[in-house]
Image 1 (tube, helix red, strand yellow):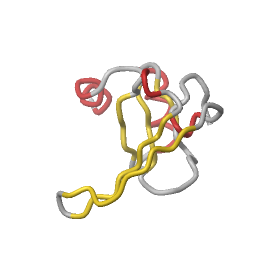
Image 2 (image 1 turned 45 degrees about the vertical axis):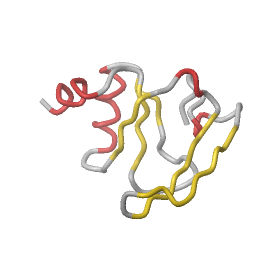
Image 3 (image 1 turned 30 degrees about the vertical axis):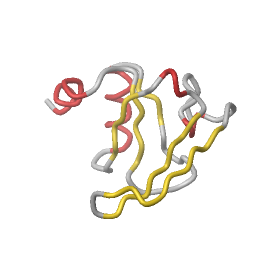
Length: 92
C-alpha cells in the first residue's frame, strides 16, 4: 500500500508540499495516518513532496538554488506567525 511506503520513509509529523504552486498554498502538516489518508483522498494523483518536520527550526525557512550539484544561492527566511514557513500546529 502506498501509505505504508510513505510511512517507511518518514515519521509523523511531517510536511506535505504540492510540487506546483506558490505562497504556501496547499502546504499541510501531516500528524497521523488519518491526515495522510485525507490528503491523498482530497488530492488524488497530484504530486507532493513530503519532508521531515524540524522542531528546532520552527519559524525558519531556508531556500536554496542548486545548479548541477552546487548551491549557488541561499536565503534564510523567518516568520513566527504563519505555518507556510513550518510553524507547527496551524493548517493552511
